[in-house]
Length: 238
Ligand code: ADE
Image 1 (cartoon, rainbow, N blue to C red):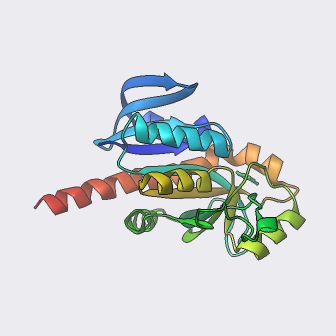
Image 2 (spheres, rainbow, N blue to C red):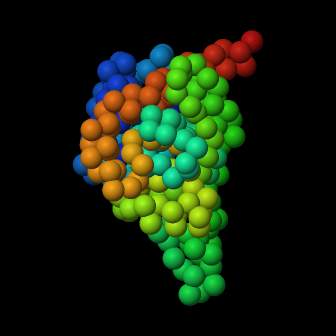
């Protein structure tokens, strides 16, 4: 069974695609899936398009059609935690859909009735990601909470509210959707996000200018994760 690696934008997987030995390409529902190996590991590499619906359907395709063992979501995010900066990486402890609101029915903000408020990432994948991050010179890698919603956050006020309400470290538009689909399918997942902007008034410019440059950071970490997974498999075989 292959490993599913996904991003929202093609720029966020471009470096991994360069490193990949692509054996086949498949397109389903306008989503492109690259089938092959990276670091000798079998992977399905894809980009979903932006937002929670795109991320959800692409994750379900990775699970149903490609039968992936687990899902690694990578890409960029806006900064919420003031102790981090642009270029730093957050590995998901968990992920919350901040734009869900069933509070009139008595549910906490962010919680869909019948589902958890936060989707927990897989502890072993978190460990492998943090270990992989140790090899990245000059880049801080921290475990934290990902907030997801169908918006690009570019406001100091909204950013403050998100930080206070949900204690999020970064904000993006896919992580918790991947978390929800993986939770429902009992498939492990982890999110690896590099900070591209500060989710304030400067965010649109920063995001567009830094997207390709900082995306490399997260992809280098994912590449090192694949090496770590391979080493772990070799060790377990002994
Ligand atoms: N992805 C990268 N930066 C973001 C932001 N500021 N808001 C939402 N998603 C993002």
